[in-house]
Length: 104
Image (cartoon, rainbow, N blue to C red; front, side):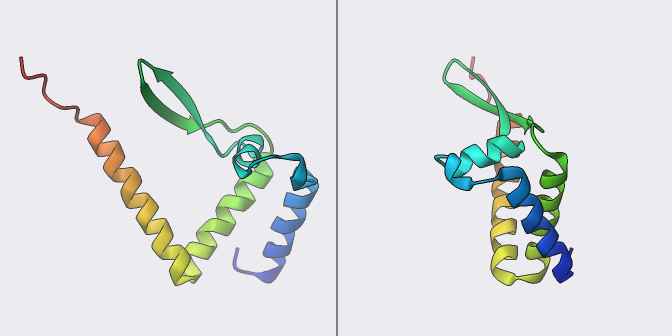
């Protein structure tokens, strides 16, 4: 997706599917509309985030993911942000799956 035409196609799909972005109050609402925000299962003060909800347009979701991956491959700043988020996500996943001993 590094070809200039793919960038135009992604932008066109975004505009056609999202419409006027001002109809959303926050950026997170656009992410929810597209289906990029994870499902949430919270109980007893613990927040558990699951898989992405996959609501909305699968085409736009695909194009946005491809554009983000291309940006992470090409631009050093985006690559650094991507690696930072991936490492943080991996740390949180490892800490959450190994639970602390009970100490009984």
